[in-house]
Image (cartoon, rainbow, N blue to C red):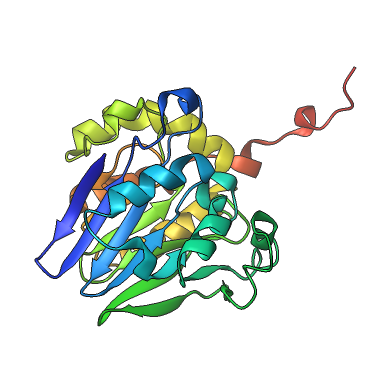
Length: 260
């Protein structure tokens, strides 16, 4: 399924979901994102091998995949970038990923395909030109990976937030945006367990929330589950996550014992 998140006639942002076939339905649901401006395209978190063929087909309605300029990976997990070898073989694009994972993701590749085509993003992040508009790599370290980035599209005011805001829902629910604070509150049980385990600490969540609160964000789209539309909803999420006890906050000696 392709969901149009933004389209002003020249700049388009598309979310792809439900691309995995029935045989792989037990895999973690994941969203992929295409941003196109004019003749240039960027793909965020292109996912694994089981998604590759369907994603290429779905993209073809919006952009010739062989002309991709950028691949962006929020971190190194297989559901993010395990299909890297196929993208490097089929296109001339360059992958940008945290400098921490720059020497790890080539393990997904063969025949030196990665040589000179995987660029490490410094911890402070960076800005990238796409057809005259700007994509920003935002620091999101330890949310949940040690080296982690989110991507912000200045023109559409969309924050592609990776695992932050992710929820565990049935594939069919992904296309339904959360547009009110009441909906968000009802949705929290679908997010709470994931965030308590995968986000490293309340301190880091609060630092991240402080950064995003000062940005011009209209839409926040995670890599898993439903997305958030409207500043009121986005800020309500920030209020929730900044006070969530998670990760190492919850660890005690009971979690570190030699098994009987």
